[in-house]
Length: 306
Ligand code: PMV
Image (cartoon, rainbow, N blue to C red; front, side, top):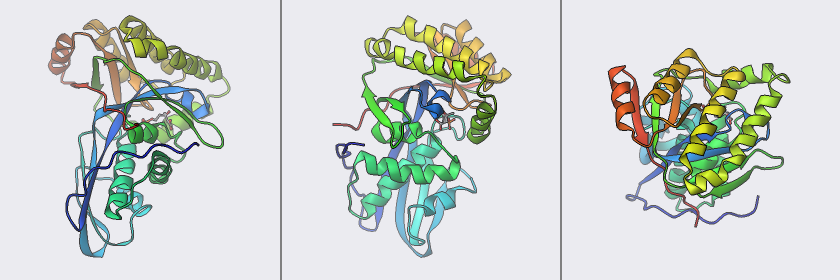
């Protein structure tokens, strides 16, 4: 990949400590297809993960975390020294729901460790180091999650040998609401399931990629009806490759019944969240609350590229 511009530095909070934030993401179009080299469009969201590091005696350890996951410490140890650091993890992302919580952890960790060392990393260095961390969570990720977490804004992403093609894409303000099934999906299981259904699902994967690419003008112009129709079509294609569930389909239906122009599962599926495009979110938020569904508006985390 070509050299990337440096990321805007955030201050090191105090001597002997360092802090960094990275956003989560929503895939607007193209999950699963992106694993096979088709384009995907993803947005960094205004929720994410903050990693802080402090000096401690003895082995590096987690001193506080919003989540419990046996993979956390092995993930931290791909980057951090084995001695001398206490790590605090705070996250405003639902975990395991397709909103990029592991990628946000990876990118925030890489940034915090670089700040601790007084180094500034370019986007490619963040991407590569973040990839190592994320591999602990997902065996063979496409890389789209940590690409958009590192860059912010919206990206169009292609997995390509020898390295990905990542394009920052302009995006108009989008009225997005996330609806959470309350159940984690397992990305590895869903990706393996799609792999097992190939080559039968290959035309659907190609159609998902073509749909993602075709939406770039509508994204830039804020053409909400076109984006909504494409989200509905993307969800239908995701159903076709076997990654939706009755709970996800029910949340898509709830959104469409309460003013959404489009809605689709976001992430690997099998659980996780639905993203809906809703110009007037009030009725949907009220209906979700009445149904006991956690729903919240999301904005886009600004691009870090300069
Ligand atoms: O981990 P999730 O739920 O955000 O899913 C990532 C998107 C996939 O395309 C299903 C997998 C990948 O590596 O791109």
